[in-house]
Length: 457
Image (cartoon, rainbow, N blue to C red; front, side, top):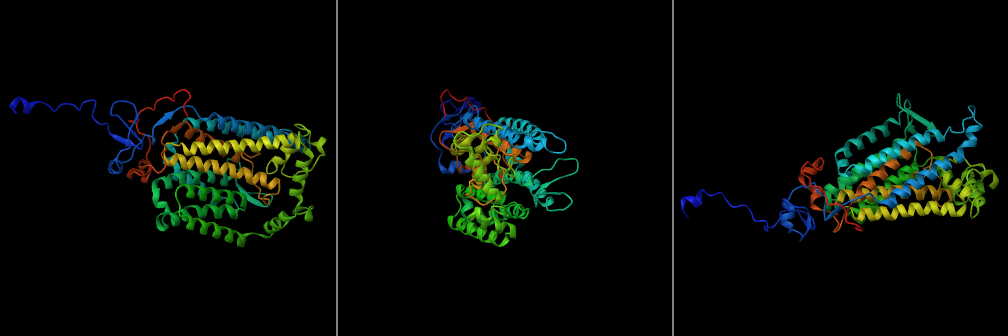
């Protein structure tokens, strides 16, 4: 080799050189778009470090239209039934305002839908950055609701918090969303270590138990139960040890039985036979069953509850709104509502399975489990399959905190649905890179994803 050859700069790598690896089940060209390719060896994947791009061959497109339509239909139906169930009571009140309940509900719905659109458009991976602060804020609010100065007691339950200059809020609703987001982030970081005792089970209990106990103490047994079961579903999907999980469930049930108060025990006893004490502990369940029965197949029609017997139904616009739906829209209307939640569960599960990374999959599964489980509990209370717990029907019942948080959660689910992975990305190495000690977010060098092909999944 002569001096000229030694001075010559090294030749550029030919275009046919192997592209660098970066995602599971795919390869990324340094200059071109993502293309499907062989999965890189384990050693290469382990050394590749954290990545910002989704895991797998990804297509970015519009949100899941079925989920969006189901959520909008439930919200619209909720506004109609809230007005129908509260207008007469508002008219007979001191101010004679038939919109006393519906007016604020319309405002909360407008705000919730706007936030849902924002959450749907924002890349859900940014939630990893705020997962811990959001969890801490929810925990502080749950502690403040235990202070007499800030708590608002309704029906003997201190579940609402009123801070100076702000309307009353229900911190347990925010805690559900915050815990789902943080657990998805934490489990994605841990990966297979969640199956261990010290690396998975004990930290999981330390994270979840304080929130469950604070909500249970409010007292809000329904929300505590829904949140606990949702957390265990996510823990199971993340690969938890089944023996540890079963022992945790048994311990939780046994501990709750010792913490129940007298009136809660009465509810459990009346649940077995509500007609035995229909004027006291069994009053609400009996009235709910009568309202459902009087609706028949087609119902009395919107606003025509009096035509179906004029049943006095406590909390008609809130906990027992499903009974109003059955009374005014009949059996067909009740089945339609159940069908919408079943559709939400099915499509949410599909989104979770097709999520491009572990964080998105666990978060989508957690949100779906939370919303659908809460709907099951609310409907189960009305049809006496579940003891009275005082929990709202998502998107339908009156209540600003529940409606706004549920719509934001639906927006996050829609954000995950905008990206689907051909080869799936759960337990991907990119979720457990060393920089995920805080959170790893899409950086400025993240390449645009190709548009979803017509007719693609």
